[in-house]
Every structure is written in C-alpha cells, then in structure tokens.
Image 1 (cartoon, rainbow, N blue to C red):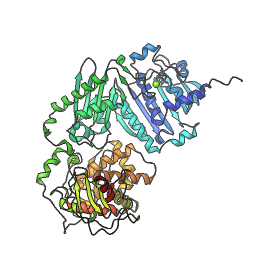
Image 2 (cartoon, rainbow, N blue to C red; image 1 turned 135 degrees about the vertical axis):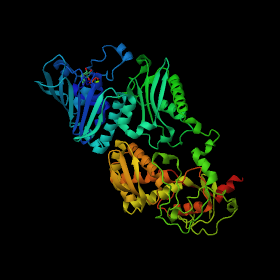
Image 3 (tube, protein in one colour; image 1 turned 90 degrees about the vertical axis):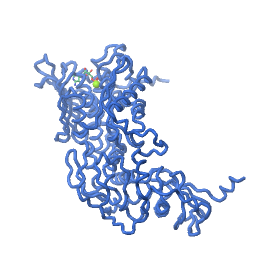
Length: 617
Ligand code: ADP
Ligand code: MG
C-alpha cells in the first residue's frame, strides 16, 4: 500500500490551532491586550465594531517590533517570551505559546503597524489567511497597532456560530474588565461603534475597580490584606449586605493574570458563610501573588485555569484572610450564630417571625394601592416580599407566617374533588378543599386515588411563570405606578443588559422614566413585583441573562419570566397558611403545564391507595 500520511500545510495547521485559541471575538481581544501589556505599554486603546465581528483594534505604546520581528510574529511558535522549557517555570509574561498571532492571522484580515523606539520608520504589514499580502515602511508612532477585521471570513461555519453583536460585545467587555482590573497602572480606552465606553486613567486597584464598576462600588469594598511565604493576598471583597443574586463581580488574579478557580471561589464563599443569604453571591476582587515556579499555567489553552503546587494552603490562607477582613470591618457581629441554619433564611427575616401579624384575605384590597415599603435597591436584598396587593390568584400567599399547619385535615379525603388526575386520564383537578403543609416545603392534599405531595416552591414558580409569560407575550402586564420613581444604580454593563431586555420588561408592567450610563429611573413596576423587590429582581435578571444569553425574543421573554418566577416564588422553609396552600394548589392545576416547573423539575408526586397499601405489608 502506498504511504498515506502527510504533514498538514502550515495554514491548515494554523486554522486548526485557531479553533483552540480563538473561540470568539473576545478571545482575540484578550490575546491582543495581553500582547500589548507584555510589550510594556502604559496606554492601551481597544476599538471594536459590531461586537468585534467587523473590527477589533488594539493600539499600544509599548516597545514595538522591528520589521523582521513583525513578520516573524505571525509564525506559529514564534515568541520572544520563552527560549527554553525551563523558562516555563518562571513566567512573568502573559503570553509564551507564540500561537495567538498565527492563529488570528489564519482566520481574519490582520493589519499591523509597528515601530520600535530606535527605528525612525515603522512597518505596515497586511496578513490574510496566514499569508503576508503586503509589507511597507510607514510613519507610525512608537508602539504597535493590530487591526483584526472580518473574523472567521474563511470559516463560514464558525462565523455563523457567533452570537449577536450585543452578546459578543458583552463577552468582549468581560475580557476587557479582567485585563483592566489586573493592570491599574495602565491607562485604557475602550470604544464600541465609535463611542467611548470606558476611559480608565492610571490609578490604584481600588480606584480602578470603582472606575470600571461605577462610583457606587467604593462604599462596598472591604480591603483584604495578607502576606505569607506561600502567597501574598490583596484586594477587596464586597460587604455582605451588598452581596448579589448575580455572580457578576467575582475576580481572582494570580500574578496579575485573571483566573477561574472553583476551588478558591469556594474558599471565599465559605468565609462568607452565615453572613449572606445562601442564594446570594459575594463580590470579590482578589489579587494573589505567588512564586511563578509554584504554579502551572500551562494546563489550559486559553490560560484561565492554573494549578497551584500547594492548593490546600492557598485555600486556607485565603479563607482566613477574608474572615479576618470581614471581622476587622465589623461586619461579623451582626450575625446571629444561634440562628437555625436549616431554615436557610436570612437572620433578619427570622426576627420578623415574631413581629408580623398574620393576615388572611383582605376583602378591601386594592391592587393599585402602593403600600409596599420604600426601600433602596441594595438594601432591599434582605427584605422579604411584602406582597399585599397581589392579585387574587396569590391571595393568601402573602401571609406565609402564621399558625401551624392544620393537621386535622390529614385523615379525611376531600369530597369536593370531582376530577381525578389519575383515573380519567384527562389530568385535571377541579378544586381542592383541604391541604396541609409538610416540613415547610410540601403541600399535601388528597385526591380520589390517594394523595399528592406538591413542592410548594416549584408549584408557585410554575404559576408565576405562566402568568408572567402571558403578560409579556400579550403585552398586558399590569403596571403599578410608583408614587416616587425609584432610582437604581447599576454598572455600565448592567445598564446595557437592561436596555437589551427593556421591551420584555415594559410588556410585563415596568415603566422607565430615564436611563443613563449608570442609573435607571423606574416609575412603574408589575403588579406582582413588590417595590422593595425591584432591585433584587433586576439583579437576578441581569445575572441570569448574562449566564444564558438568549438569541431570539421568545427565549428572552422566557428568561425574564423564569427569573421573575424564581425570585418571587415562595421558598422552601416558608410557612403557608391554609388559604395560601389552597390557592396555590388550585392555581397550579389551572396552569397549562402543571407537572413540571419552569426549570424542568417535577412539581409533585403522587401516592395511590395501592402504594400506601403496599407499605403496610
Ligand atoms: P506570545 O504572546 O505567546 O509570545 P503571540 O503570537 O501572541 O505569542 O505573539 C508573538 C510575538 O509577537 C510575541 O512574543 C512578541 O514578541 C510579538 N508581539 C506581539 N504583539 C506585540 C505587541 N503589541 N508589541 C510588541 N510585540 C508584540
Ligand atoms: Mg500573546
């Protein structure tokens, strides 16, 4: 048989490598910014168009390249940063693989302008699909400008795979944040479609965080400082009361390189234990400095994961540094260590158990009355919904606190149930008359063939979800005018997300008076959303939206409805009085789909008489 093995031509090899290095425009941004930093620049400009699909340009004032180096920089494994394998263990630069430029040039149109301090004249290079198409001497400032156009022009499949401009823009912004936060000593400019998004002057770490995330961030930050032989930890955590539903602001940097580490994340979260609600996330900006020889950053092609030699020690040190910082800033004493952790409710909610009188059906209730307490955005995070004014379908659900469940109803089968979800196959329950609550988690009721155990939180999610989805799609959300418009403060990125989903929000019943860079003025909220919860709801929406960036308008509405239902539904641990239980069960079975929660979890289980009989054998 003839020999069949061939070496792949370079441009093909480069395209394959590009698949690893360049997943999307944001990957190009990351590589170019890192190169600029490695080149010693102290001022860097990032310019993008159409989510980076049309243009990504990075201009730096670093050391620049000679004409020969400029050509060489596009070769695979061409790097000035390591010379031998040993160098891998004492890396002080971001790059070292020498594949970024080769990969980018394989799948885009690249234009490079560069000049070193000692050369009087610079060079302009054009590269398309790995081939240098032109090289000319040119007048250009000291430093380097990389212009990357038409990403994936020669791989239509990859190009089609890219998300909308807005989504790609958001990924780029994330990447930009990571680099900018790690290098406060470098000045950054960021332009998108001709307008300036960020202008970050040289500053210190704290000021950089504030410049990136908005002035409101300053008061939230608690400094963390710890120096040991293994690691030097510095940076900031956000005060527990500012913990958010969204994971947004969580950053680890090791030797000024952004990294992801679920393990270290866990260390931080565990230091916050008991101080924040279990579903909230602490914000942190933590900078770890370690001996480069004690880490391996080589294990991940895009280099966001690293391996520490002594992970356990770093974990323990980090955790204690954060506990220490929290203690020093007097955040801890507010904690009630005796609180029943099983309830997983915030401690100040516990206090409410005693003071809130129970309310049953309020006959004179006016859904348009604004009787929810005024609360500021962030402070509202701990507030439980004060949901008087919900419409009929939720009647009773507001009085979660009250007498113990009525167990007298257990022994009797309800006579009023006419439909059966088991016998007829039509799967409807007409109405239920008796219920009881089990472990503050389940609602149990009897049906003709036996009993049914309903997860209260999932059931309520389903009811709310269908209601919200309906409101969004038929644009019939009832709005509740606020007496005083609510001003909420967000970061630039967060405001951009709100703008993206604003149509869904308006359909739901939100009314916006004004939106500027960092502030949103809300003059109306959906009937079902208590004013005190608005900030939290929007936080959660932003975070869910970031994690699962939807493409079409249906999935956008779907996310909005899901988030609202998740945020506003009763939770495990909440006590429901019998009217609430009943209302919930009846509303559930009036839903189009009552078996599965919006998050694809079963809502109830059934035990037939036979199942029960078997237990007695
Ligand atoms: P790496 O960064 O891993 O070395 P790259 O492909 O990103 O690999 O870059 C190849 C080489 O090109 C770098 O090692 C560096 O010498 C040179 N280079 C890239 N970008 C710049 C820049 N902005 N300024 C100066 N030199 C650069
Ligand atoms: Mg590089």
